[in-house]
Length: 305
Image (cartoon, rainbow, N blue to C red; front, side, top):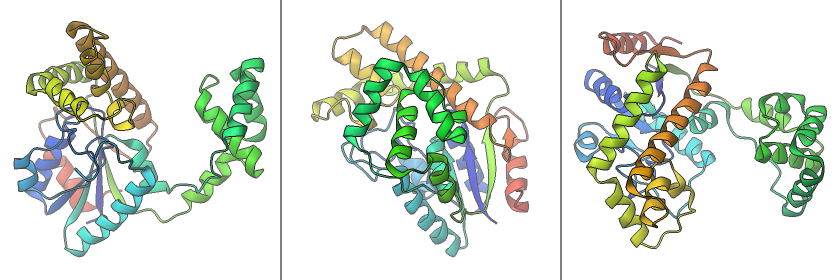
């Protein structure tokens, strides 16, 4: 059986389904979650508890401290090695999560782009201050229409990077990315778990945030804050952690923190759904479907592409 990719928006029920699959089939779970790699970020990342990790082998969980970076490139390298090791043991690699940048890095590879040039980046920002970002987006469309078609005219960071790469190398960013995409991709069954209606997903998102607060999310963030970590660390800018940290600093009251956390979580889920709808190969599954586990296991056992 090939590897299995189980993707879906936050709060869709991926972890519970993964454990149910592993109870039926000889799987090991590889986390595809940019938050679960960090020690101490447990409640807010919905990290599998000790019982789940004792029942089924989990990989790429608790492998970094919050102030230690972990990149998509490192994930790709680690995940490819784990897939090979798990398959060598005669088991099925079950890659589960909602960090789609990691999935994309695994499937398409990563371009070895020219290093950032602070002076050029500053020059581009100064141009934008004078001409406006839409004008720079139009310039990007002339030199790299493929990349520009994927980038909104107001997306400053990606417009800047696209122009920076082109000006440094004379080669379009999309060309660099296409070269990376030629890397060998692991064959996989792609499963997408998502409620059929957006209101149902948003209700699940809100309920999960309430459950995280009840489980001690505020105390978890307080402990991270007491350790002396910088609140601007990427790990601590994650949805939920950012809002609770702001509350602990006295910048918002509890009620405002709860609403901000839920709103940010719903927005994140919406972005994830938008990403997933562009996937032409995934098998879409309703987490509330009575036969979802039987259907998933049949897809895995037949190696459905």
